[in-house]
Length: 189
Image (cartoon, rainbow, N blue to C red; front, top):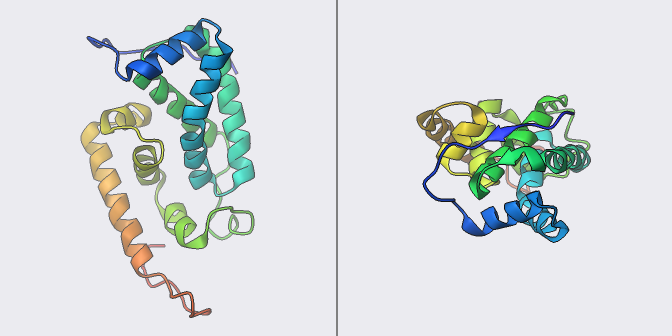
């Protein structure tokens, strides 16, 4: 895949100064700074990919391809630490789009996510799931999520709140562990 050019919007001062310094060091070829970026961002991005794909193996493959793209695109990246998070999340989302999305029933056999978490996440429409996971798992703020999703901040807020409500409703209706044959009682998943 060709390197992705990313130009940051103009900011008066860098956001996340420590991450910005680490990104600058990685751009200059510091392996230690690149390792620091990887250690700092990989767990959250892998969590996002795993939640969306339902499989740890699929998510690890997507994350590996994403980090390969990041390594190839570092020299063309221009921005601060927050812009780097946005770029990395955008690459993760692009790799999601290139993979077949699991259906709720078929993915259960290979999923590393417990059913009481996987079921409501898998049932969410893509936009709602992305808004919720990019905020809650990756840790992006609403303007950053809006930039990744190509939408407005208000749309992100609305989608994330709606997703939270749906997931909470579904989790509240899950069967008790001591009721082996009981069905979930939420109507949407």
